[in-house]
Image 1 (cartoon, rainbow, N blue to C red):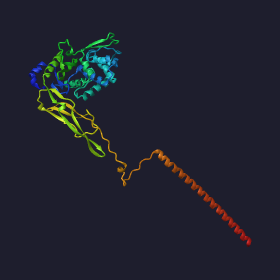
Image 2 (image 1 turned 30 degrees about the vertical axis):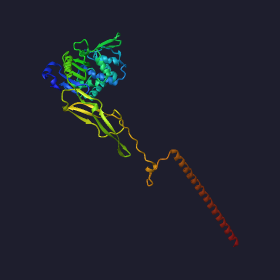
Image 3 (image 1 turned 180 degrees about the horizontal axis):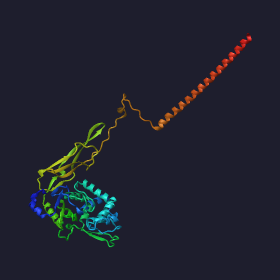
Image 4 (image 1 turned 90 degrees about the horizontal axis):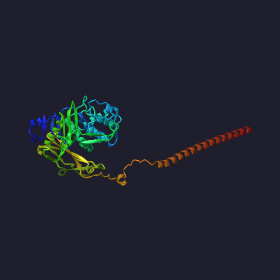
Length: 443
């Protein structure tokens, strides 16, 4: 089933089918991801070396310094089947990551793919796991990789649509665009290649002398295995048209002719403006809790971050949109900060989203601290505040000394009293003896 948006620009579906030899394809607007044309774009297919788009994307996302040295391990070069394409490096050869990326994307070296995977993740298995998680993050839910190079393997599959999504993300990196646009690249000398090595891009759409050369194509990645046949994902631009074309399972040369045919028709679609950033704005109050009361402290005016324009034939009246912006905002809000978005749909087909950004800054306000008299009325009971340590020491120590002194004095007083009582008893006994003796004497 061939789906064509704006099929009045194509003679007939039968004519289109006769012109195309690729089993599946996707033509996507590179800015929004909106699909203009497609045929069986979600059918599972073998990817072949277009897998290396994801490999290069991960390398560029993970490595900042592309001048790092990359050393080819024995496993990277010896674990490949005999028929796999190679850069023909040997174990111990050293090049930079920058050079390796050109060997990956132009020569399509499978040994380079292995070496880059080991360099980024430590081992190939860990790198492949990251490839699959990244594909899921991008929405490529029908893609599963089992190696970083694209050779057939149990469970290795993708779709024309998924590969277009991956390419859409990759072209956000200027270094990637430079890779896929280069017709040739020179790799500096190694032990295996003491004179250096020049690699040539296998994408004939960018080779000026090729019969397939297409000046609107900015770059792409080719692939081939017996199981996948020929595959190609391309990025092209003409005027305001910015497109990605993904074609899978085609005979030799057909990926180039099919891509050009699809681009020629897509470039005829008129560019329609769905949204102009300067023509729409939304006002949102900024609310802050000040002293227990929600207070409006400002208004944020939100507008679109950019225009939304894409090639399509359908009437603008067929487009619906949804604005997602909160009723209130909480400070601080910075100028240029995203505060919402506006999404566009053609029937139930998602077209694209424009971020809504703040046109001004709104800072938080400080709460008003009441005076001591206001905070502590005469009848208020104020909770005791903790005393400083030094003050506590100066108060407690004298109390302890005073208490101990009191205890000592009490004990001394008690001792004197006991002594006095003892002396009085002795005196009484002495007086009794004297009276008794006097009494006996008188008798």
